[in-house]
Structures are given as structure tokens and as C-alpha cells.
Length: 80
Image (cartoon, rainbow, N blue to C red; front, side, top):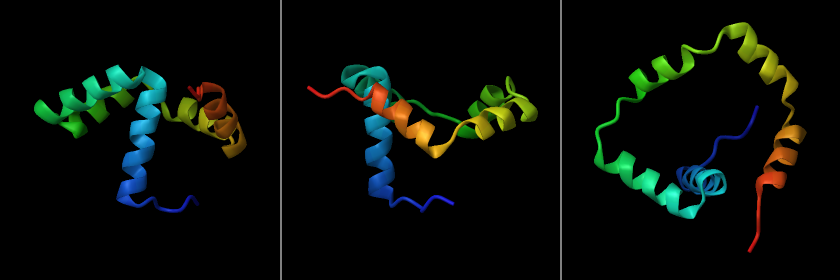
């Protein structure tokens, strides 16, 4: 089981993931958007995950090892 992240570390990793995925400008735009508009996480979660079935998620999860996640993350990471 993965260790529980502190709130500061969780925030740091989340912003880093957003920046790597969206780029710094769109990551900041996204953070500004969710901070100023009401957001119902439970409703979003229900609608987003409705497209997945349990078997499909289980197979994808089983195929993804921690080493694979680190490899994928290293490939996406760019340094100035």
C-alpha cells in the first residue's frame, strides 16, 4: 500500500501532474477555473466513471505496475 501523502506533497504532485499534462499556462487556467466556479465532485465522478466497467478497470489496473507508472512519468517529464 502506498504511503499517505501530506497535503503539501499531494498539492505539489497534483500541480506538477497538471503542468506536465497541460503545460504551465493551461494548468493555471484550470486551477483558476475550478476555484471560481461551483463544482460538484460527486456528480462529476458519477458521470465520468459511468463510461468504465469494473472488469475493464481491473484489467488496466492489473497491467499497470509501479515501475510502468514511473517509466511513463519519466517519458512525459521534460526539463528546461
